[in-house]
Image (tube, rainbow, N blue to C red; front, side, top):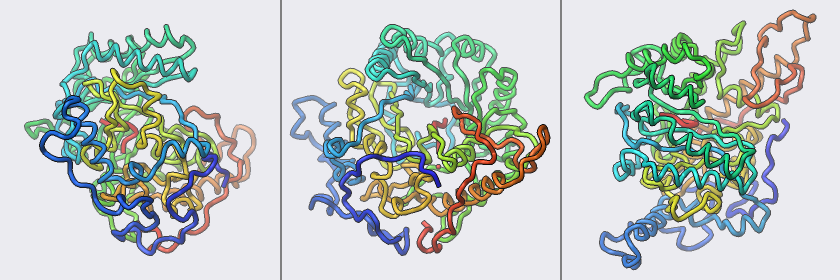
Length: 518
């Protein structure tokens, strides 16, 4: 298999770089990491309830110190075991931020029962202002433009997020994007700014779509399937279903294909995969993002059991329908990303492969955070202690939480580094690796599912590559529209793909969510 990404000079690792597979990835003891300092071995205490030694410096400093203690207690990797300065000395270079998630609203009109912002470990939303102020928007625009200019970025991507960003009035929706474009045009005129809004779809109206289209802001919608039965967990604060409003908004959006980015859907084992996929097609999405539920070793996903692969089974049912369709009816990002990685092509995903993380989140109060999905791990897991007023995005690059996600294979568990699928899997989505008291240096809680999914797709691509090329103009059976990853050239169907060998025994392998979901 060709390697799509290399990680450069190896970082001195705190564990054996070529370990044997752990006998059981559910073992509560760390299977392949050893602490590098005595303080790693014992849990850190919670911060004291009263004023700390930094009390005279103000509540923000006290909160930052408390957050450092919390990071060290919950996630020794990377917060006490990664020396960022040593990583830089070993040759690892930071990668600039390219995607900025603007949390324009911290509240939502729905109360989905599985939402990682409101219903999981982190409840920081309660302390956030309901909306981003014009002053915070202006400061964000300045910082983004500063970063784009410093790194000569050809493009930056904005995502308007929440909460529910469409709680803003139509006239206000484009204000953050307009501000960033103006600032970037002045500081880095060669940098192009793209923008998307991620919404639950219930507030889509003609007026909002007109305003978004005029500003060149595309719309992504989160939905759990195309039928009411698929969306019973997407309810409002009174428990009333939100599907009818979302479906109405999606039908309206489908009439504006130039504004339609696609649909994100979290895999639900209780729903039939083919029915879910086919029902989503009724809304004519140009792209479907199938997301593994945000879960980890301390909070496993529904149906998780060593030796079983229920999520791979669900996804492969959809893959077979999608792969063998005579016409490509939509793009499915997860499958296209795996195919691209198998062929050694670059991708921009953080949920697979070894591409360095390049996303920063700006909360409504102007604080700078890591990817939202970390909120599923523990209280404050996404926090950095940085704000737009006090820190640049270049300073964020040296934060151990982000730096760890830019180290490629050197940040992975030894078992992952030794796996032949590492260039495609990349250890899985970072939040899925978490275990309380250890941190983020374990294989994904979906390890077995990912192995089965990748091997099956590799075999399908290899079969397509070995199919004799038909006469000019004739369709290729089973591979008439082999998808290429977004932003890459189409791949010649005859490019050979090395199918991975058989998977290791179940006891060795038993052990993603959102790119950016609403």
